[in-house]
Length: 377
Image 1 (cartoon, rainbow, N blue to C red):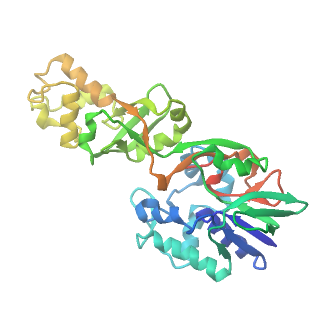
Image 2: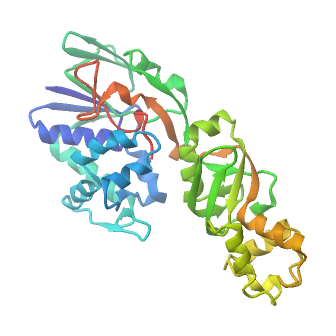
Image 3: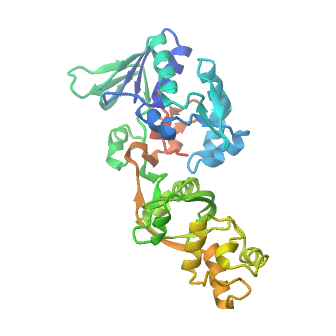
């Protein structure tokens, strides 16, 4: 059996390794269009590589996938996050669980994961060919023909596994459309929010738990929000961008972000909290235990006198402060995308794929895996 894996990322390497493990007599060749493989693995998790997540149940795990969640349940029942941990640790890469559930190599170096995959490929005798961009795939009878840029002869194989990852532009999928695969047009997922004209940026570096939502939509999230020199980031914002990826694209990334800085307390709850120590100056009270600079900024936004106590503050000022804490609004104008960590919503439509084995429903011998599919998390 001759197997061609197209794309030298995490999905491609794992597919090639798994194929060779299950079919030792197969000839497995991995084609990568650039001069190096596993580049996204290297930078993931800030260079530490967040391998997977310590989620107790698969039913909970799939809820973190804006696209593909329900369909992935049967996939994870075959090979889950726990199997992932066992796979690496059985190959001499110890992993650790951090407080937020993310799983990293004990070394805190993505190189540990990369080296494991490279060693496995070497051990199994898998042929990795760099600078080998596949331009076109055709099929005659039971055999595929791959046309590779710069090569005069085609590569013939029995099985093709496509693991080329996401692409920011729809044209990047044209070679797959030529196979009559249905493509969901890509839009960005997992990005931060630009607030070019807002003074909140002067508080860059502050991170607090908060409840965030996109006005005029049903999208909302809670978790840490990080104020940056361009706007806002952090897990809650990134999740919001993923779940609202298509909505925000349609809005041209111009929208209002509403933030509850009390992490979900109602206006009445905040009122009761502010009135517990009502004789102290508001500047010194800070009953929500917010970072001091943020607390002062919120009082400024509400135009309250920080030198007055809650007791002495006018009713209008009290209401404005409560409203600012629970429904603070920010104009978002654009997104910040880190090119190296680009994640796409879109790709090959899942209704084209038999998720019991990742094969194409219409093209025997063709398989797809990874972010080339309309799946992201």
